[in-house]
Length: 529
Image (cartoon, rainbow, N blue to C red; front, side, top):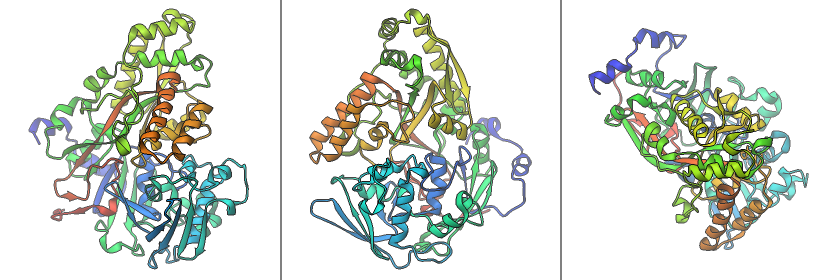
């Protein structure tokens, strides 16, 4: 590291230590999360910062390592010839952190809880491949025994799918499908996630949760694969300010940062030259949501005008600076079996102006002042300022900037209490469906108010199509409708992964779904503390 970089970033060590609030032995691994988590509940966690904690506490039939699904609670499974019938065989040594055995009945109850409309799980659609799962989630049927999952016995779980989808095992490694401890949930209600009450089946247990300070995870001695968990303790620090986070790393108070927004923009050229700085491609897209329930955004011509007014090249070259590919689609090219999405609106100021005029707002006259919601990160602030300028210069509209902390930002999207909103999506599995399904009617991750029965029909048809070429054609029709015709979202760029990590930290590998479990990390050689 250069002396100039040290001088630019170094903070007094005493300042950093005083921020910890208490004297405690340093954890084996100190990780900087970009925000305070919303919840560790597998059925309710939706953001990446929360999921990192939750997947350390809970584990499903399968688990991800470097983005590849592998056996976890299920040691093996049988698949029928038509690829619609799965039988999972659970391992004998899978137990909860209190010693109770993890059974097939735990999965049935947990999946019912995730699908129960009262739970309001945004990720409930991840279970829709099961027969009648969608009907149960939408309240069309109330008998859960009609859903395609049942416990044959304590260690055998049977799943029946509506269609032979190619990513069911990937979904079985996804957090929403992890089981929760029924006696704990029923005993404590909403407070079951608190320290001292929460019972998990993952590689770690939660030892401390000090809001806006840290979460301490401690290795679970009841975890079936505990011998391969090398980090005995992990501290997770919620730090949203990029310079502060990098200071923690450079002064030895943190070992790992992985969030794209944690790169101080003014230092990007110098940081890219450092040995501790790593990037890699993965399935993620940064985009803008448009609230289609707002009267001024109901007309797709207006939404498309806002899309054509965005100079994506200006954003990636001037602000993000990490070599991100410009995005004209939501789905990154090459996803799954080399899916190639249709191109969406490119930067075209004249077309943007013409569309606004057609919609009745020539030069922006008569269009109300609107707000753009974003997160309190330097990169997000800078992008917001650029977008504000583009929309003012091209469309003649005034866009105020509204900065909110992560929890409020998430809540505003769910409640549709925004006009325009910064957003992003990282694929939960390597298939176009993980990007496109969320904009179906009623999906908890839609968060735009947009409803299109033809779009839903395309997604349903793709789910039922076994031929990859025909399936991609259907997805193309859906994505064209989403991006080029209706535009409830505006793709801007596809992500590259970013990591600041110690040279001797192992088990952190760039992968398409940006999944980096703490259980896979270890030191080689061990650091001298």
